[in-house]
Length: 459
Image (cartoon, rainbow, N blue to C red; front, top):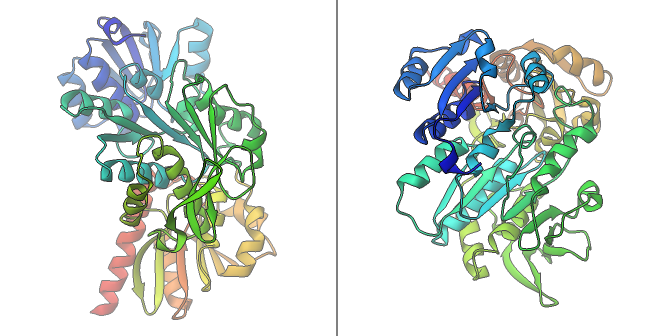
């Protein structure tokens, strides 16, 4: 749909969190007649009431009424599963359903770099945004990180910047309802089992991720990880293929040679930055940096500028983020690890004995795959949240475990029994929604409790 066709369209927005609020603001700005419907009554606030009144939107909290179906199209928030009762009713009535990513993309005429994958998305989009900005390119960052894409669109429309690039992190949920979403550069970092509480099979989950390529053509760029066999085998549209990683491939573009990250061009290797000079350690971040190089090389002609920008990157909060040292024990916040594969990367990042805090809301994770890494690295696993019994069953006999219930209790347990030189790692491998609104709130809570404990012991 064209932006000029939005005026007076009847639009229902399902969900009143970040993406729903962003879509409401953008569509109201362009003259749509809105109903925002949120089933969770606890999400109703005076601030939201004032916001909806300010944009002349109708709203309902605590239920979905039949007014939902009086719409030309519906925008569904990523938190609403496909098997929800309201989604079945919408499907039966054959009302068009779009994600906020799809709707927001109708208002973008400039190049989009879109990034998805099971792990590393947030670090990679922040790397890309940082490099482009440092190289003097007007860049707008949003999606599944920071601001909703709709909010980013409004910021762009209010600016006088020229020749902008949009850098978007997109999740599988956001890709489930795209129709014409068309990035100039589409990156898939990796595929590993995740969100199996939302998809019927892992193949369905992978299919959603691959949807980022759906509308690409010969003038577009596909970036994919050549170290991920699933991505190598995946069917790709007719676009320019740029592989990144360390595995030999006809499409290999960004790789590592003799400790240097660089690109293969005109039959030769051009170094950009030594791996030792990346400000974010670990092999997973080498892969993220290679993905960044792949995406930004289409916009930055001087490879030296890309290397210089990578050197000044600041690590992303909640991703193996150092917090404090107490009694010689270092505390790290990896709340962004909401699946098992991401947790495995964090566990492998330390040589010191670890107290690993696992748990939250289970998404169908295969925690038994952590057994070898935990046996090698962990003093003990501290289990929190609703997933604790599931994790305990899957890891039985592989590692010592203690069910402590909450993150605060886990911190106190590690301080009581830990030794100087140990690492306490919050890397839950689960969603946060049993005890927190999102992974950011969970991470901030962890940080606040650690700092409280340090202050208490200093008194």
